[in-house]
Image 1 (cartoon, rainbow, N blue to C red):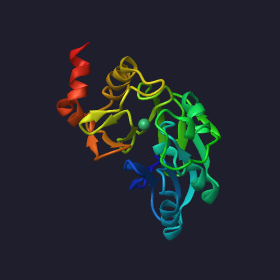
Image 2 (tube, protein in one colour):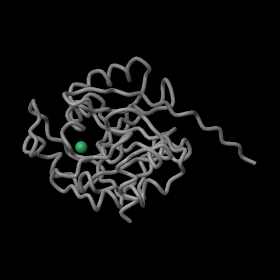
Image 3 (cartoon, rainbow, N blue to C red):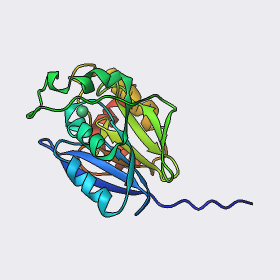
Image 4 (cartoon, rainbow, N blue to C red):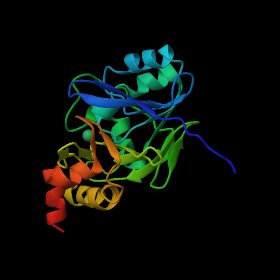
Length: 222
Ligand SMILES: [Fe+2]
């Protein structure tokens, strides 16, 4: 019999930028490999400093979607760490032209090139972490959530927040699509899954199912 002991995953938050976007540094402790999920404006030096402090090797940087507040410092962190950028192809055009968005960023942002295109069923793995890609269009066509099944952790980007959902009035946004994504892709996961959104506090899927008025509205409209 083989006994596999997994190391617990550590999630560190970096809330930054003009609209308080959260980037997550995900790892299993000093000296290991790490994944960064979203890189808000002004956060790259802080995230990089932290990785040096505890000796982390950042292998991948994932964009939950292409809006500028989530990729503001992504190219800078990529240059500092040498990590590969992963994202869904649906938002590639936004990442290539972040300054041409409907809502213009307050400072010019470096365009980001995707190294690895993510699709549903795909995974982003390091030695201690395995993130499953879940396509969740609606906030944008290329929005994804990332699920660590063993740890029951879900990174929801701007698809699902504590008490709210992502706006759908920006290019490629769709209420029908986000409603389908939340109901069929997220709320079908176990209720005790902890969510880490791109803005605001943490929550669980169960709590959002019971208390989030937007989620309740979606289910009522079925
Ligand atoms: Fe967004």
